[in-house]
Amino acid sequence: MIRATSSKTQHPKPGTSEKIGATTLFCGSASDFYDQWPSPTTIHVDGPYGVSGFPGDPATVDGLAEWYAPHAAAWAAHSTPETTLWFWGTEIGWAQVHPVLDLAGWDYEGLQVWDKGIAHVAGNVNSRTIRGFPVVTEVCARYSRRAVFETEDGTTLRMKEWLRAEWQRSGLPLYRTNEACGVKNAATRKYFTQDHLWYFPPAEMMEKLARYANEHGRLTKRPYFSLDGKTRLTAKQWGRMRPKWNHRHGVTNVWSTPAIRGAERIKHNGKIVHTNQKPLAIIELLLEASTDAGDVVWDPFAGLATTGVAANRIGRECYASEIMPSVAVAAAERLRSELDVPTDLSQPA
Image (cartoon, rainbow, N blue to C red; front, top):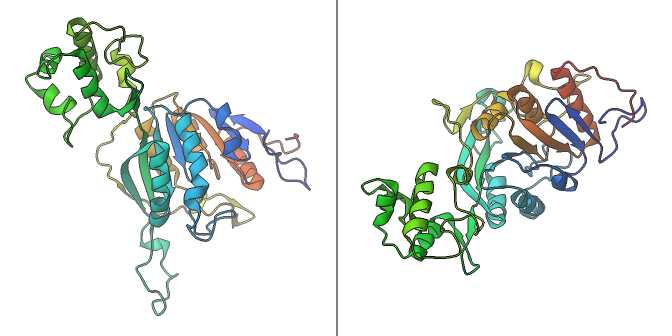
């Protein structure tokens, strides 16, 4: 249990965990827990920035890429094409880490900007010494787990190339993809084009394409468009080959939300516990956009467990870890308080 062990030792033991609502919070390095967690639908990453923003955060972005590399690889290894990765940082910090994410198998989808507003710096800027515009933003990049497919000869292809290769393997002319889908020209123009106009085939269309190729293509032991090389593709299987997205009208990639103040800011004895605490409303937005009720969310750098609080509120299952014992205790207390669970600091870790 992640609880204070005594009045003298206010730290849980590394490796301990506590399930609070739908959130399981671990104390220790996330790298030690990835193998224990179920495959995620969303991974929310709010780790080191390279700005000395909290204990353990380096002073510069030098080395951030190398630091994140093993994590990025582990996230990819445990994910599926249905997984979304949200990555927070400064613009230069994210730019340093992007090549590592790409190499690990994460496809960049877009960049969101958190605009904290002028109040974030008001009164804290010396106009005689500052040499640039005051910074009131952080960025959050969205990635999807790259889908790759094994061909009949054992090579791997990305989705767009694999679709064309599988149809060609059937021996059927390309124009018959339209006949398979029951459309005039959308299949050749969207689903099988190799240029920038390529479009992910809807699940029902993909099932029609697979059925047509298997019924009219040249005979083969390996079913056309099979994901495992053995069984025929279904619409349900194909629907899980890209990340979930639940759109909310009126929301753009610029989030004008003030930095946390007041009751939402977690403090102990009047002091801020964690300087990088994110607004709960933003985290709920991210989870609602990229998951459905009951889905699994990972938060490898939990901080004050804002992701866990959001998951509990909207019905997601969260697995989170925090390496700093004192912060892990505060996170657990916050989670329990949200659910009105009594805090018993006399229990052993």
